[in-house]
Amino acid sequence: MYDVVVVGGGPVGTRVARQSGEAGYETLVLEEHNTIGTPMQCAGLVSPRVIEMTGTKSSVLRSSKATIHPPDGEPLVLDAGEARAAVLDRKKFDREMADKAVKEGVEIRLGCRVTSSRLENGRRKVFYEHRGEHHEIEARIVVGADGPTSVIRRGAGFDGPAYLLAGIQALVGYETEEMHIYLGQDVAPGFFAWRMPHPDGTLIGAATEDGQAFDHLMRLLRQKGWESKIISYFAGTIPLGRLKNIVDDGLMLVGDAACQVKPLSGGGLYTGLTAADICARTIIDAFENGDTSREFLSRYDDSWQDELGNEISKGLWLRKIFKTLTDKQLNDLIDVLNNDRVKQVLEGKGDIDYPSTLAKPVLKTAPKLLKFAGPFIKGFF
Ligand SMILES: Cc1cc2nc3c(=O)[nH]c(=O)nc-3n(C[C@H](O)[C@H](O)[C@H](O)COP(=O)(O)OP(=O)(O)OC[C@H]3O[C@@H](n4cnc5c(N)ncnc54)[C@H](O)[C@@H]3O)c2cc1C
Image 1 (tube, rainbow, N blue to C red):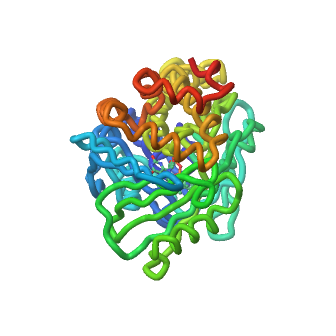
Image 2: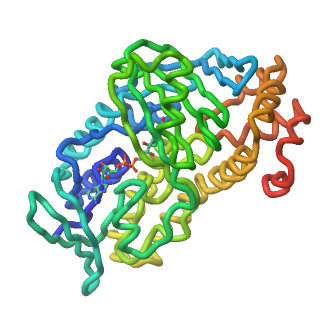
């Protein structure tokens, strides 16, 4: 019998576990893989905010520059003059986060695949498989931090994400110092492709909704002559949308399992880690009040929505607009942005965690951009 069982040993789950352990509650993390941090799926691009909030030592590079490549035409080169993004070594980062949890007395069991969880006599039961054997344990609260396809979410009967994007990346054997974004129907319809530094070379990836991310990525690699330098591939899923339910009696979802992901970039580390702190605080409050009911735990959902719900909603609107743009419109869009006054706004106010805050000042500087919003503009403001 544990106070808290966290399903999933990713960075968000272990952050909740660390805080629960630190508060003196018996906490267990069940992770299906045999090693924390593998298989690696993420590009690891985060804001300096994430480095600060986690105190991580696994940052590979901090960068002030980004280049956005339209399908055709002049790239938009931005330089904020100070680091606005950092790249994490995700494997190391995940292990560092797990080690911190262990230091607070958290138990982590690896190779344990959770199959379901249900409420019995006011206690949460968790069922899992380990080396072919079935086990069950009890907890006062179960935290589903088991990623985009969460078994805990499905078991609770909650709706899943509105969109699931497939993301695929190739590790390529040459060095890159800055971040590059590629737009267009060829490379990533409805989303984008990227090239960014990695401790072992360069990560080049694409995410799309059309189920063809691998083909799009290969096209980009061939176009740029990077195909011969591929070392390995990584694949993953990006959940987008807003979930109606993320809590139940003795149950909370967090991170990708709760779809706490930025819709414009697919980044889920800042949002998930922020939600992890709120989730952990609510768990501690729930134990102090002796109330683990759905009503009490809903405070977590409310606080998380207060903190980031608005940004996610605006991101979803902007993504709706972005998805309608043809290659020609994307060329025109980058052309309008490629102007000293607009660049000054982008470089001065750009924030990868709150991209929607750029919308108003950029539109004020370049009202021509309104033509791209079409009928969607009403919902945004
Ligand atoms: C291609 C790609 C690129 C990305 N790039 C970025 C980026 O640059 N920046 C950024 O901020 N975000 C990025 N993301 C998103 C980021 O990876 C996630 O938001 C982040 O990993 C979420 O952390 P998490 O702990 O919620 O989930 P995860 O990291 O997915 O961890 C979930 C854990 O649960 C475990 N698990 C799953 N099911 C079970 C089960 N049944 N039983 C036991 N354990 C289970 C998994 O093995 C995993 O360890 C990217 C994602 C993809 C796919």
